[in-house]
Length: 203
Image (cartoon, rainbow, N blue to C red; front, side, top):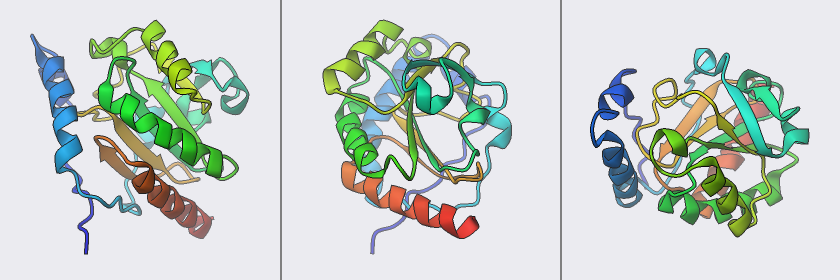
């Protein structure tokens, strides 16, 4: 039986320490390494909460304004408003992000009536690409789910210690799981099914 992904606890100041000289090269390297070592099953239902983290976080949309509620929206107005959210931190020049995004698009096409898939570009804060790089990536891969960038560095607030990082929010806004590192389409499909089930049960 596959073991669930371990939930690594990272101090809130860890990203700031990593941000010293050469630090974000370390993050990018670890992000690649996680591809190999993470377990094959995503298990949700952890009862976590990140409600405080998302307050006051402004998203500026690259695409999907109609689903997000405008070009500039508060993340709190997207998460916890009645529909589960799969929030994926990505970067324009992040190879693991590029590798997993077609699977996210396929899952989005299957479940767009049940969940919101949201890509959030943090590449400029990691030296992993500009906003233009992120927009080119979306176009190159034919990504249609909502995607945006943040104007402030939220890496510490969300404990992003590998790229990509995906956070799963139930319909009521609870963080119920996360994955640090790449997700296959099959893993994501399983996680979304769990997420929809959890949200239905809580509703």
